[in-house]
Length: 290
Image (cartoon, rainbow, N blue to C red):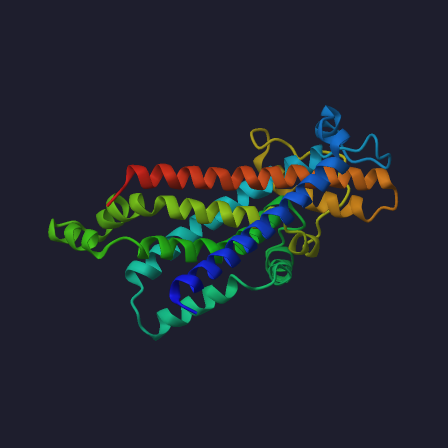
């Protein structure tokens, strides 16, 4: 077999695999849309609390808690992950300790999420006494997102040509000026992409949150942060994925339709997050080119 024929066969196999994945994902989205059609376009579904009556049940507490938890998770993972990635890539060196840290961070990206739940249960719930709260949930998902953000930050910095660093140093730039005036602007698109991809993964997790005491039925909202920020952080919590888990476990068919509607909304939310990441990456690459 000549190289051109092998290339055509490989391209055909790749195209087939891509279309197979797309058709599979599209089929899931269509199935969820058809099953939950009536609830998706029902305004009461978004402003009602969970109920033992399926036609009255909604996702109000689930989507509000999801927003609070994900904002906290993004905050903690970004505050810790991006500086850690910058330090490891630019100032951590290439010694044995640096390689050991890099290997451990890479391995943490593949650790099952239930392990993070057990870690959070032992540290945040029992050791620090944060309780089964929105604060604990945000910290738990922040830990889950942290390795992905560290690795993405390092890869984004690694793609920047060495000439930019050498040119900045030649003009007398300090390490601070190099990082904040040159490296971060060029790598920001890739870093933001990593943050949103990590967020898309974390928003659908249920195992770690159930481990730390997430509730499957909440008929109230936490106080708004502008009224009592501390009480909001201490409030019990649920999430869209956990609400889906609760409805799927019920025998009534109507609850399964509610779960399908919530699942479709979650898919749309993940698609929106990924679309934002691609848009931001495009704008950043267009603004900062080398």
